[in-house]
Amino acid sequence: MATIVTTSVLDEYSGTRFLRNDQLNIIRPSNLPSKPVEVAFREALASPVGVKPLDRERAWSPAIIFADFTRKYSPFIPAILNILEQKTDDIKLICAGGTHTPSDPSFVKKVVGEDIYKRYQKNISISTTKNPGCKYEWIGVTGRGTPVELNKELFDRDLLISSMNVQPHYFAGYEGGAKALLPGCAGLKTIATNHGYVVGDTNCRELVMKGNAVREDLNEVPGILRDTMKIEHRILDFVLNQDGSMVKALYGDTIQAHTQLAENYSRRIHTAKAPMSPLVLTVADGPMGLNLYQSLKASAFATSLAPSDHRPKPVVVLLAPLEQGLGGEAFRIEMETYGKMEPQKVIEDLKRRVKQGKVTEASQKPNRLSLDDGKADIVVVSPKAPTVVEQLLAKTRIRFYRSLDEALERLDKSLYSGMVGFVPFGSSTVPIPAGD
Image (cartoon, rainbow, N blue to C red; front, side):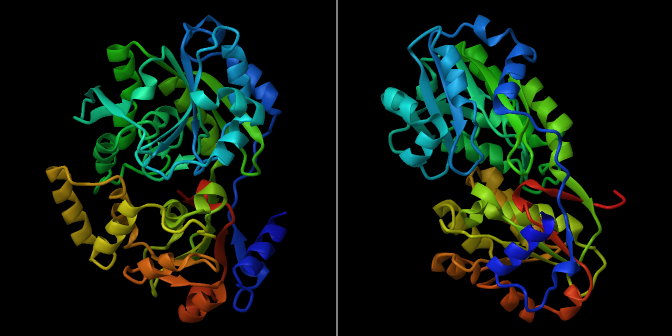
């Protein structure tokens, strides 16, 4: 299977002139035993984590929160709805989009099903700061001083159940959990303030939750919502193998259930030990590959394999479709501002903006690129990306090519004279250097 994946990717990105298939060291975690979705759902509800069973929850006006088109969506929405309908007909469905472009109705139909979409169409809302219809309201402040503004659609509910995929996130540690609320259903000021904690902080990265200022800050939001608005938040999060098969789901307390899924399952499924390599190819697969903003998460993960003492400087090649272009105006502005600035100057200027309260939801992107700059250069290869991607990257230190062969032709040949690291599922694989 791995050989087939490798060959097809090299063909798709026109990369067979300089690389042989047997030259690639395939970096892919092993799958854990899987189970049918229905079984995982029943097991999750039978053993709630830190809360009472769902059928005993106060749920006269609940809402189900699910991820937008940039994430792997939950297969549990119809099943959760079926249980809640036994208690009430006052149910909302909310697509949590943070600062992303609003999800299309076709995506929502795929998540909830055609029949549910027809029955609940008036009760479905898309929460994103780019949706003019969304209104946000202040409910409190976190211990770090983040003003918590959430979508007002939540405030006439007594129970929120979010269902998200748990996999590594490049500055919040992991996807899922309280991220359904912040950034998922939060206002722009809240998101920008929270994301600003990442600047210059190397603890704000994948696989790290304890001591991660971003994660610890957003984890306070469910408690603030409960204390000020008397609204409970529960999760029914899940972990998937990289082939999409279901491994584990848990229902329960936002922090406790999420931590168990992250540490006991996602860490095992989404990490792989591998030898260091001066050249690493990584694929931004699935929804993460749709735009440049999301795709760069894969290259951030892959930089861990760059040997620090190698000359010439190691290179990470990001392979991504990028069909939807850049991924946001704030991201474009941040990249144009810092694209060719020296990394240390970037961090210094971002710290200045944090003090002034002038960071954006996308400021964390040049921050991570600057922190990783000393490890490896980034090259983006995308045959079908819109020209806007090529135009933006021309203003940065990141090189762009339409084919892998073209990129390799421009690189120092010594980078790929030996074995080359290859991460076929780069958006959900964190390589761990062998020996660490």
